[in-house]
Amino acid sequence: MPNMQPLFYTNEKHAKTQLRELEFIFQITAAKTVVVYPRGADILPLFDATTQAVIDAYLGTTNEFLLAQFDATSMGTDAFGGIINMGTMTSPGTYSSSLTAQAGQAAALVSVEVSTQSGTSFGTWFPTAAFGPTGLASTSLTTGCALGANGNIAFRAILTGVDALTSGLIKVVVKWIAT
Image 1: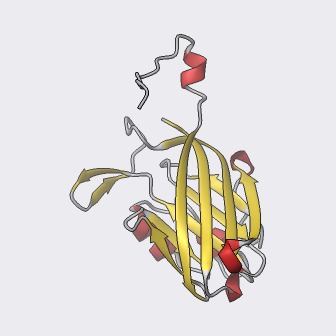
Image 2: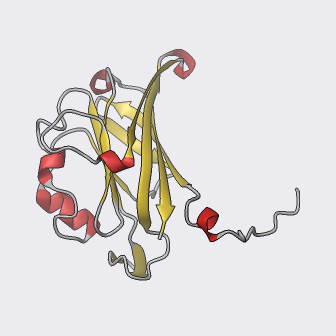
């Protein structure tokens, strides 16, 4: 294994603009049913409309992402969405969602790439992506992503045929910049 010394940029613009990447793999086990691998990853997958109470309880924030971004229209046919809790654990089972001095939370969202792979040897591949600064439209069946006020991330992707898939995988790649 090569000697991997930490890299400290002399030019601070590089350190503040280099992307970090989160990757989530979901196994499709039945129609609109997935299991995330590795298990325990802190992401709330959504195929259907949810409630503001579910969103707020999951993040421990209030209205960071709005119900309209995950309502019945937004989560219509072939929609797959997710909310990623970037909060820092302060004690067992308790998260801090304050952006102040919370290393590891997102300061900027660059993009989210979502794809499905199904069929023989996962040979049928359908990708889609969204640019982070564009945002996540409300009450709109569109692909998009957003950075919340507390550094959490939400996305929605329209993936042709995903509602009917009973096996395969969904891959989510989030490119972001840390605080």
